[in-house]
Image 1 (cartoon, rainbow, N blue to C red):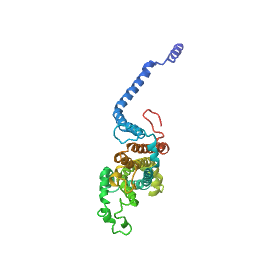
Image 2: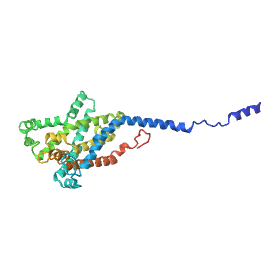
Image 3: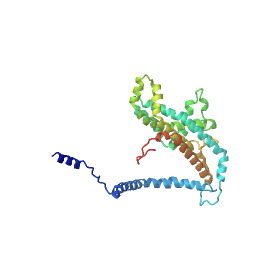
Image 4: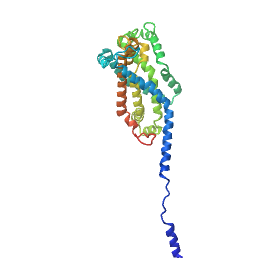
Amino acid sequence: MTHTIRGSATTDDRPRPAVRAPRGRARGAPAGRRLRGWMSATWFLLPALLLFLFFVLIPIFVAFYTSFFTWGGFGRPEDFAGLDNYRKLSGDPVFRGDLWRGLVMVVLSIAVQLPIALGTAVLLNQRMRGRAVYRAVFFAPYILSEVIAGVLFGIIFLPGTGLADTLVGDLPLVGGLAGRWFSDPGTALPTLFAVMTWKYFGFHMMIYLAGLQGVPAEVLEAASIDGAGPWRRFRGVTLPLLAPTLRISVFLSVIGSIQLFDLVWVTTTGGPTHSTETMAVTMFQFGFKRYQMGYASAISVAMFLISMVFSLLYQRYALRRDLQGAVTSAGGRR
């Protein structure tokens, strides 16, 4: 009896070989699913890829190509000029002025426009009566088109009869600005920046409001219990947690300042004496007013290269920390 039990136990405890599926099926099924997934994604992305091809990539290639020709915009470009357009561009004082004015706009946007948007977002993130109305009012200028905003402020700053001259005409400190807003080279650029701030700060305010919603209330309560005041909580808790949103906002502000066109064209057309002219306005002037499309293409290529270099450097040194640890759809990490 004892021998029988031991034999049965020995027979039952023997390791059994694991049953494996055929290799072809085990590997073929996931590969097939991946292929179907890629095909489905391709079909969904195909319309966007075609639009990107025809409205972004092909125009960039055409601009690069025509920038090497002396071309008036009609017919086929045949007068090859080599790098003459780029040599002319490097020595053009108007284009160098455009670069300087673009840099001024970038600095003012980061130093003035974005802090105003951030402060407004922090205030409207507090519990108050009617804050939804305030948010809508401050965001409303961004909804307006640049043409409408330009025409509106062209009427407001109209010399003599405009609302701005009526308001500041009798004031002791700013009364001298009456009639000079867009007509004086010394005041045209600051006035234009004030219009830009009114137009675009609501967009950045909404970005900051969205970022503030992601700040955990528990962390702020813990800092308050530890004795931190409002300013210390903002500086030590809110601002660091809002840093990714701030970096995105700075990026959008810089790119927008580099490519600024429509608001400038409607309000000042780049004047007086090129004091508000931007690279995009200069490109439009040469391309569609003077019919020098080859030179205008060189300006567009310069704008593209400036924007691309800034984007790559900014992503490499500023946005890299936000991308680290991001899980991709394939399961890997960036």
